Length: 196
Image (cartoon, rainbow, N blue to C red):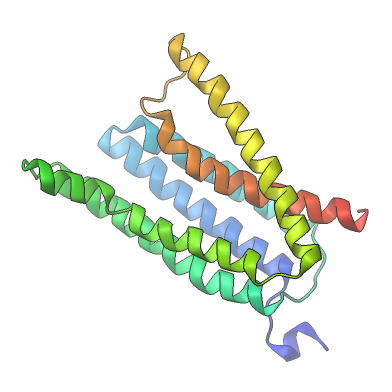
């Protein structure tokens, strides 16, 4: 059945949307980091920009094949959660400068984590809704991503200890880096599986 007639989204189009979204997120984070003087947010934005560019390049090299229903459900949960994250990140940074009470500051600082919980839930639901082959590919992608980010975090800790890394709070970058690495590893594992 033709992808356009069936109304389903293709893998290529999904990568284009995610790449564009990552670019938008990167621009927002770079602007917020530069505007509010948060180097960690700034460097997180740089990572999002690079990930978005990579995903757009991957989209050009990906086959035009329809997405499965589980993948479409994942996008329906992922994109609104990430949009909410961007909004709450801005709101929390604006409110934080005006609040003095510690309990309110804690609440405001942790506000952007709420939509990320929904992102993680969407990722888990995608894996649980997959068949055996898809789970195997997901496991490989998660393994590659977690080990890569673990090694990079380990190296970053040494660089930060030596005063060579300009990021104040590198821990803030671990989860976004893991999401980005997972997306890249997932694309690479699928291409390798197909022998492309």
